[in-house]
Image (cartoon, rainbow, N blue to C red; front, side, top):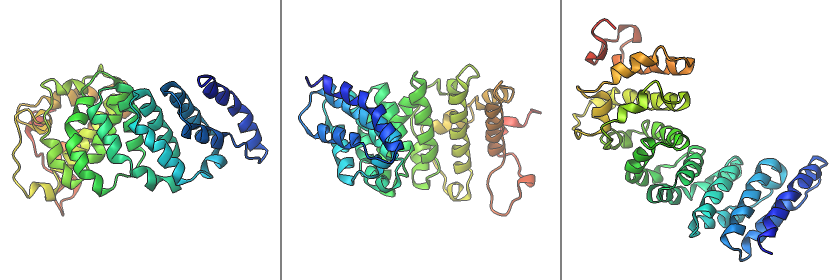
Amino acid sequence: MQRQLPLRASGQTGLAIERERHGRDSGELRRLLNSLECKQDEYAKSMILHSITRCVYLLEAEASACSTDDIVLVGSMLDDKDNSVKIQALNTLKAFSGIRKFRLKIQEHSIKVLELISTIWDSELHVAGLRLLNNLPLPDFVHPQLRRVMPALMEILQSDYILAQVQAARLLSYLAQKNDLLYDLLNCQVHSNFLNLFQSTQPGGLLFEVLVFAERLSEGQNSPHYRAVKWHYNEQSLHEALFGDESRLADRLLTLVIHPEEEVQIQACKVIVSLQCPQDVGVRPSSCQPSHSYFNNGE
């Protein structure tokens, strides 16, 4: 009987939407949340959470009428032993994060989400968790945990699951803009074939995101604040892969300038400009001098 409840609830969503169009609260979202509080098996919890996620997106008034206690209830599902329940709970929190009044409460789960994506190797969980994090402003108190999970994020970026790679690149681009995290990020160890991410055969969406990531890193390392310190990097570090003397990033960028997708072309050009122009205070862009030998041979 428990396995019938979520399916029946899902079938009622259409009627609930119709009632909301006429200004009436269907009560459907509240019924689902109440049923989540009851003892359910993993399958039932997963399906109920899926239905709650749909209702949050489709029944705006009812979703806005929910309380922070409801967010706490959904967040508690992140501790469930079943990964499918965790994934659905992440998706539900992502849906609720679109409502401003819940964002601070959902932020409280950021450390837990980072723990999940760094300790469980599940591509769907990675996508769900990273989508949630990318939809939230991450407070400073999360930075120590972000520093600890950088190696895991880098592994996800270098995996072969495109959706997870795209989301990881977006989060890493955000981290690259944080002064207190930049060195740890640049010194993070990467695979020897890291630059394969910049091959023209990669999907355009992924290429665009890794190019944005490269631009953020280049801007960060060229900032006067960062250049004021002499940093030392590991031989297998991200810095050496992208900006070291033996890096072949220039070759990758030059092939992407003629990529079929315009946004990839433009972003590749932005990376080239950022590599050539250190952000010295008081120096106009037109007078930038090349900071690296990448493009000094007539290219």
